[in-house]
Length: 293
Image 1: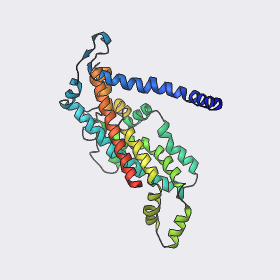
Image 2: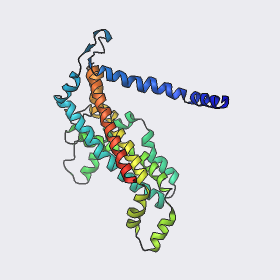
Image 3: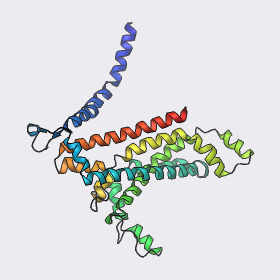
């Protein structure tokens, strides 16, 4: 019994720092945001002038046009960026795995954007997207396109520009995960398929894709959760503009909380974001469970 107690204490000691960090930096802020979402609270005025307003902040969202646009842009960003990033990473990972020498160097090259500072990356892409002298439009003009997109300066292309940056930044991580998944597919399956006369496309769709189903599900889950929280490219590159064309939910929460000092309303929106991620995650897990059954 003493040995069991000692082992339990040792186990709790090992995870104590993580538990304390989770409690202080995850659970407490989550509960506090829930409380503040029912109040009218100005950060500059302090807690003494905090006023309880019930569900007023949540009702206010239905009439807030910028909030609706931000939610729509967030969903559009997610449903475009995630499939494109996963599709491209799947193709590139298969090419790297089978048809490229020096895989280690190439993996590092593709992974570098994922560990680079997103602020620095956003600044570089701002330069690339310059409408008049940017390298992207210079290339397009040399190819014969007289009026290339204005990218970050136009309402019609600002969100597309953010999506392009998101795809580029996400590719490296996805490729590494897909490459790891490819190592788990038995080569005997490909050899048997070759004997039966299967071509490259057939092997890709009937062996590679099914063999990577769990890996692709994992990437889809974490990519969607990450995409719902996109912030840095919007903050650095567009500030939600032109107008509200590239405003996303996290940026609008930040704007309300730290620029307009409306902490109560920002907390209510943060809970909506939490519920959005939770509902999506739960739906995807149920879909995966039904698939396994």
